[in-house]
Image (spheres, rainbow, N blue to C red):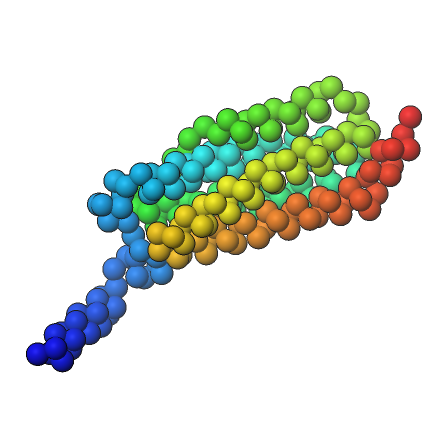
Length: 199
């Protein structure tokens, strides 16, 4: 009898794989009613909405930071990251779809404050390499926030079995880390030395 039960179980599993639920097709377990109502899942969704709002807010800020840059390398870095950030928004929308909900943002006070700092710097500092040094600091503050956010979201997604969502979050996390490294390279290769030499 045990053999028959196992055979029936295997048959059901095979049939399910052939039919393919949305979660199986996407390589991620779509949350059921119990998980959707759990505080842990709600935490994940709240943080997802937070970073979604943050990324869309950053899309509006990056062109201003690029325009304010006086060095070509930094201006190009901001221009490139604008396109990457748009891709991050699209990935987040894909994750919302995996979760079975429409994309929605939740105001991110942290990102609003970080962007406000950058805008204040642009308004107060004269156009110079010193401004570039300040913009790099402002941008890296943003990157560090995003690295923390995406790293935490990836961990939560993995814990709940949302593998497809975790993979998308990992891609974005890697790109945020690459941007942070690039900004450090620009600062250390030229901007900081030139800024220090300015009167």
